[in-house]
Length: 160
Image (cartoon, rainbow, N blue to C red; front, side, top):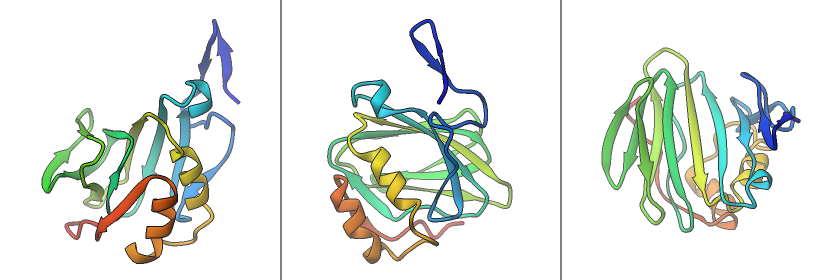
């Protein structure tokens, strides 16, 4: 549950805010570092671990900015059709209303910090994505995305 420290919440390395083990699509472990409930819905920060090349379909958030920060590994984050290569310490912002996607590239494992502002229902989206086993097609994912204020607008990156 994290440790309350001077009015803040401390989450140790490798831990989840709510001490849960979660895997998006059954293969991508992630942990909540800052919950929407901690910020009155203003911010959600997750740490995503990736062991396999690839990522989600291209999509648009109608109400959130999404910020990516590479901790480990090599990523490509596409924002508005422009590919940005990220290595450890690099970051990129995908503004709301702009199509984007990301993919782990190469053979090494990766780790991303991803922030959503405002949080919206993204935390619930990830919880529901943990109920799926394997990466569904973009068409099959579209209803889940739409319920949480997003629209699937294309396939995942193929450059992996």
